[in-house]
Length: 348
Ligand SMILES: NC(=O)c1ccc[n+]([C@@H]2O[C@H](COP(=O)([O-])OP(=O)(O)OC[C@H]3O[C@@H](n4cnc5c(N)ncnc54)[C@H](O)[C@@H]3O)[C@@H](O)[C@H]2O)c1
Image (cartoon, rainbow, N blue to C red; front, side):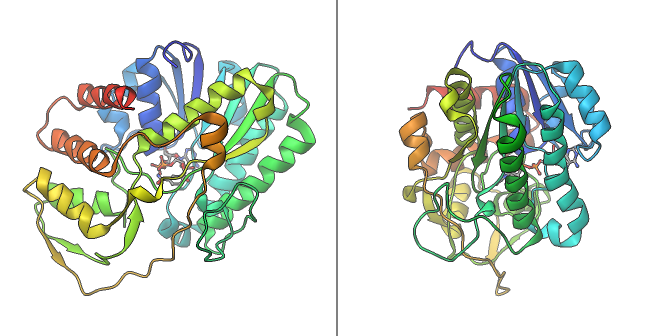
C-alpha cells in the first residue's frame, strides 16, 4: 500500500471522523488529497487537529449542489474517490429528515451523475452503512445480497442511496471503461476526534473535558467496538484490488467486527478509567431505547480482500483514550495521530 496512493485522491466528507483519518493517512503516504465538505470551519473537527487547511486542497461544497460538485470534480480529475459525505446520525435524521435524505440520497445521486458524464480514469469507493440492510432482528450476520431497507430516516436514506448506486451502475457505469466502483457497508466505528451526540466515546470524552460526571445509561448493553483505522484499511485494500482487477467492479463488501470485539458498555468505561483517572461516572436509571444491532458477515472481505480487523478490544480503547488525552493535555495531536497510523500499519 505504501506507494500505491501517490496519486490524486478526492475524499468527500473529509472533515468527518472517517474522512479526516483517511485524509491524514493518505497525505502522509504521498497522495495529493482533495477534500469536499460543508463544515470545515468548525473548531473541534479533525480538520483543525490534522492541519488540513495547509496540507491538502479543500473545497467548501455542499454535495446537494450538483453544479458545483460537477465543476470541482471535473477540474480535479481524481484517480480515486472515497465518498463519505453524509448526514451520519440516526438521531439527527429524525430532527432534519429533508436534509438527511437530500445529503445521503441526492448527494450520492449527484456524485453518480458527475461520474456518468466523466471521461477521466477513476476508482470510486462508495460508503453506505450496515443500516442499509432491512433489520429482520435475525441472529446471523447479514450478507451482501440480503434485502435492503430501513424504517428510520437515516437507514432509509442509506438504503435508497444503495438503490440509486445499483441503478446507475447497471444502467450507465458498468460499461464505462474509465470507471470502476464498489460499495462498502460497515457499522459504528470509534476513533479520535469524534464529538457526535449520543455516542458512548464522545459522551465520555465530553464529560472529562467539561469535568462533569458522566451519567451512564444501559451499561450492560453489549456492542462491537471497531477502530476507524481498521475499517479504513478495508476501504483502501478494496480500492487497490478494484484498480487491479475488474471482477470487483460493482461489488459490495461488508467490513464488520468479529464476535470477539463484543464487549459491554461498562467494560469500555472501566478500560478507559484504567488509562485515564479523570473519568468519573454514575449509573443512570434513565433507559435509552436502542434497537438491536445488525451484525455483519464479513466473510467475503476476508476471502477476496484478505481483510480482517487488526486491533484487539484493549488496543482499540487504548488508542482512542490516548488520543483524547493528548488533545486534553494540549500536546502535538498531529504527530500523535500520525504515530497512531504508523502503529496501526505495524500491527498484525
Ligand atoms: N462513523 C460511523 O460509525 C459510521 C457507521 C456506519 C456508516 N458510516 C458512514 O460513513 C460515512 C462517514 O461517516 P463519519 O462518521 O465520518 O461521518 P461524520 O458525520 O463524522 O462526517 C460527515 C462528513 O460529511 C460531510 N457532509 C455532511 N453533509 C454534507 C453535505 N450535504 N455536503 C457536503 N458535505 C457534507 C460533513 O461535513 C463531514 O465532513 C458516512 O456516510 C456515514 O453514514 C459511519
